[in-house]
Image 1 (cartoon, one colour):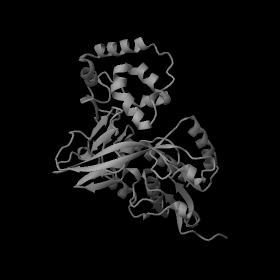
Image 2 (tube, rainbow, N blue to C red):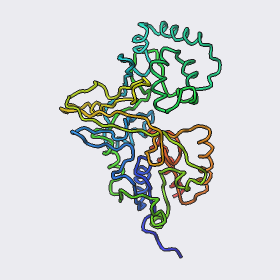
Image 3 (cartoon, rainbow, N blue to C red):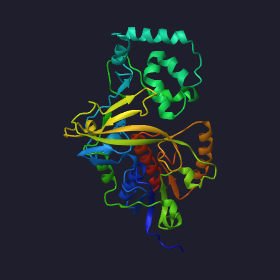
Image 4 (spheres, rainbow, N blue to C red):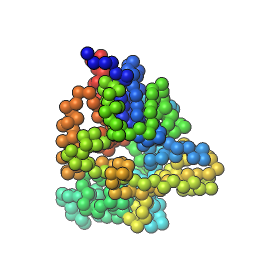
Length: 372
């Protein structure tokens, strides 16, 4: 007869997936322990208070969803404001509105009607005569022509991925919307905003009354941690969980340089993208604008894409053919586990928006506890 373990669930990682799962399991009367290798909870949504401003320490996080249930869910922990993402692009001293819309087309060509804009784009596309785009460059050119591509896509994308646009798969560019209205709202989603008081409020709400131990590296003594609980929720790198037996999965990394400026308003917008290849950072974030701040100083963050190595933070999975094949092998092992649930960006090796992670966690909770 086995001894009763101290916890029913060990949750490895306190990002959104782990925090939602821990909250839902606790709500169902389960005893949970959350561990995280960082010195704070919340994963990449963590905010640091600097000069009274909630600084998104790991890059801009803007919540958006069409799912009312998920919107109501997050708002049950903290009220979200009405922030709307309307980024700008800076190219050779000029500013352009994003996403590509009538404001952008007017800035580029002086066109004033949707018909004029469509004709201009169409004439540029037809001249290229690209039948079947085989890479990102051809895909972008076949969608919006060379003017928009050269000024607003090429340099930014090549910096982001550290590769020439001709070496990148075509599907990446489909994340960029094109509109023939004067609308600078980046997302089409019905619900959009930032937690009032920052994302820490959301994570604190999710982890309320749950034991959390920080600065704990699961892999330094995994047998000890596994012995504490009946089941494990694992949100770290799936290849690391299986000791890299099929090889390492690859990522893109980022470096964030935070600066305090003794001005009230540095750039007048939360997000400005720098689309020239020659400018080393991809964007500057001015955090106070996420919450309509009026503090006397401001904090900006320059975001630099980086090649990933094992000691760097993994941010974007590289879902190319090679990595996808490796991941499938790990996925097969994960599917055979009876006491481990894998979830989140690193464990599922896919790019997730925040609402998708929360939705995925709630779905796995529902499946897992569905028979109880």
